[in-house]
Image (cartoon, rainbow, N blue to C red; front, side, top):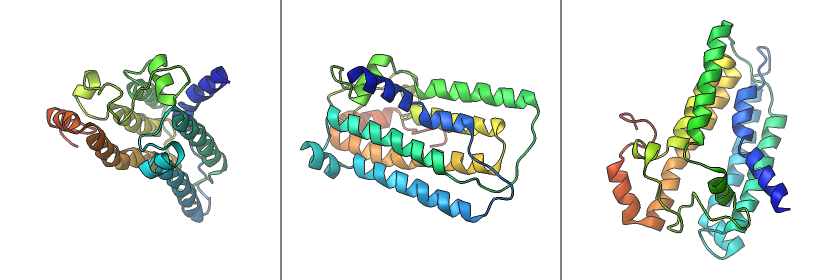
Length: 228
């Protein structure tokens, strides 16, 4: 079961990025109401995540506001399955589309791969096992002081380089699928990461105190240097 869960978790790590690479359904003549349907669908998906990320939910299920590996495994399974459900039933969106030459599509694919590399930079198979709560692995990527605070490499440039990587791959995907549906989903997904930054940093400040406050002063930009 441990090996099965490990494979599931690592495949699950790729589902959102793979969805962006595959592209979202687009039909120029689709009903405009599909924007509402997809918006409600995504809102429900995010509500589940907000609940499962909250300290009160973790305290309710694990007895501790920071959670534990079992809670992380439950979260991983739910996150993957709910996203597959969203991607499976989302409706095609109307709007314009462009015809781009193959060389621009190729550049978009290169940019997407570069963004994917940036998203996982600093991660190893072992560290992601800890992130997913695989039994027998050491905890990693947590808000609490039980794991080292990452401040080197890209983390010395901005505080959330993983989110920057995803934003870049989403932007590059518009050269692969230059249509309104890809733009809408790319914006929504990127904004989700941006919205979660203050929430995540609030948890880090609560858990790590002066250590994280000093890091914020040392690295003032969250996503893009000189911008924000």
